[in-house]
Image (tube, rainbow, N blue to C red; front, side):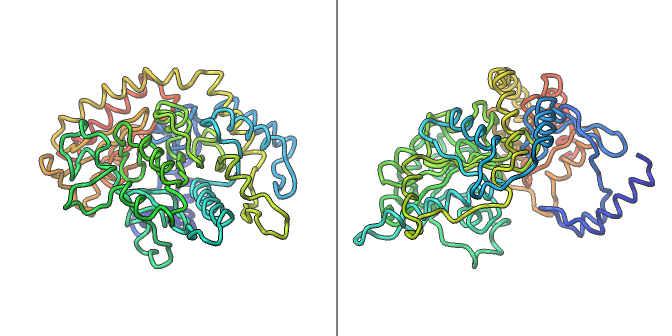
Length: 463
């Protein structure tokens, strides 16, 4: 593309497009990098420059860009129909995909409710859990109107999903509009305020925190308030937006056990961790946990089209059955629910997992990533390195000894990512945490190149 044409695009972008999670005052001053094409694990801008897609185009791309099987599946579906409402009708791709999702999901999840993105998948689970208990309520039982979530959680940007989230930058301004939620302490074991002996402490803090701890333990909350709690929501194994925080072994399983003990529904938000990111198809499989709701999005279509699914059990589903005038119906839906194009892409995505044995093939790459990350721990301004599967977070700190963070206005994480672009790598930080989340199709050579660039850029920016 010519320089003049690219400049015109940049001017029009700045004139009309409001970008997400972006301070537009700063954006208007910067040169806009405009992506025109994708090939394999690379993004290509309007000048023809290639960038290794180090965060899978915001955690969605699985098998690389322009994957032939997914391209062809979408084209074939376009030749039939691109959209038909799921309100009072069925369509072939949504039926076939639902069956496939039930086959691969943790056993017992048998019903699939479609939506458009991760936030709506979570919103649906929250509403279903809330309505479920309303419809089971007896005259003498207390109405279950509360939810329990974890410190550092991020579940999306709709009002319900924000209510069970905690990261202030996302929710603080909207708190007067959010419903109250019990917040249990999530074990940030790399800087544990309770027991500095991690990993030997494992799941001790879930039961009883130190007397001077600011947070309540999960079981303390459940024991005191279980009769009013509808559900618990958790990001299984890895908290994403919190900075790629990996929970200690056994934590998720203990959360499931306690939810069962106190008769509380469990919502597993696998929007970010699903479809192989953690080394298993779903993060829940690491500890053989079956949630009551499984929220899926991002990688469901291989990074092609907006689609989400909320899976649940027969037990939940049956509570919504009744005569029309009983109003037990789940009155929720989206115009593009079960969109045939999205479902066709998702079916092709799942077929590739099976055909190419994707989960098996990424295991050596997970091991290599672990080995490559070891070299970052010696860098003077790296406070912690966290990894699960092909997900990693490299936390940059001002003081390695005290783990003191860099001030927000220094934007160290942003500077490292901008520096990486000079070397052909596209990554995006979470504050001062450098996120590593490449497509599962990344090659060994590309993975080495990626980590070399990140290492070099951290050294360059931090001095």
